[in-house]
Amino acid sequence: MAAAVKLRDGYTASAMRALARSSDNANQVRRLLTLAMIYEGSTRCEAARVGGVGLQTVRDWVLRFNASGPNGLIDGVPPGGVPLLDDAQRRTLANIAESGPIPASHGVVRWRLIDLAQWVRDEFTISISKQTLSRELRAMGYRQTVGAAQPSCAGC
Image (cartoon, rainbow, N blue to C red; front, side, top):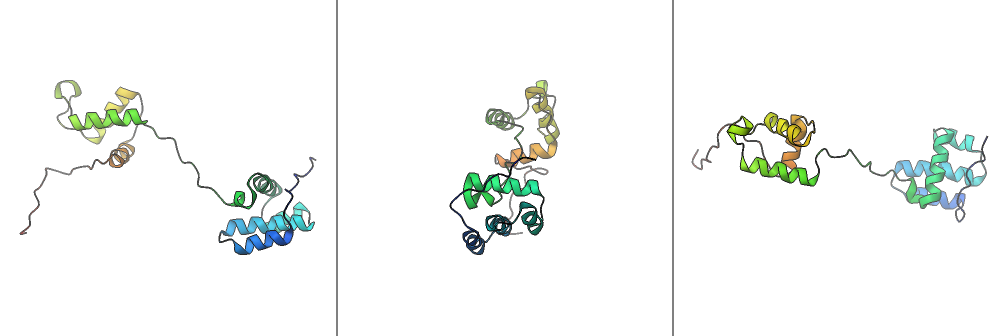
């Protein structure tokens, strides 16, 4: 069995408990209190049991704490997915949406989401759903129009 990762110097169990009292983040408090038990001399098995996690999780918390201090025990925001279209492709899509279709070459007289999705697939070899394309177009400031444009009626 490998040796346990040593906790960083400069902290004590009482200091960890003080940090836990001042924190508003429940997950950080639980992690700080678990590490405070280790600083007191408890085994990592006991600390893991009290913290409600496994030994590997306690080890991960120790590594995060050693790397970034108490702030390393706060959960970060996950990065999210990689966008399907890059900026150049979005600009090209905006240009084609603005200029409208050419019936002879595109085979349609107005753009629908399904037609633009097919154009994206032909142009960029990217398969994109209507829902994702709609989200991309809305993020670029375009709105889907339903039916013909209707003038506003002030006296209605």
